[in-house]
Amino acid sequence: EVDIIEGVNDVPPNHSTLHTTEGCTMNPANMVQTGTLENTNCFWQVNQNAGCGVRINKPHSYGHGFNNIGGGW
Image (cartoon, rainbow, N blue to C red):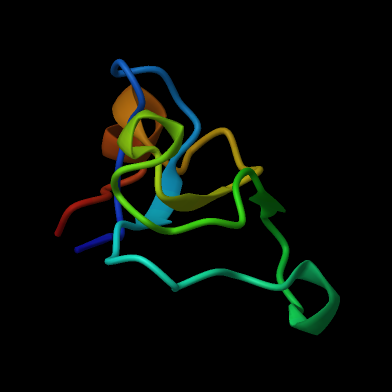
């Protein structure tokens, strides 16, 4: 499962997250991104189904801020 826009408990910022089967991981050494990696193990049965998420470090990436700038269209 790929969550492109996901709010954790409806609290911004956005978290883009992969929830996968066993064996899928993310290697931070091989990543170029502006977000912050939160977990490296994407397997849905570990980390309370958190997956390997990337927190988008922008205030308007989710919730009211996202809606106020026309997000979702």
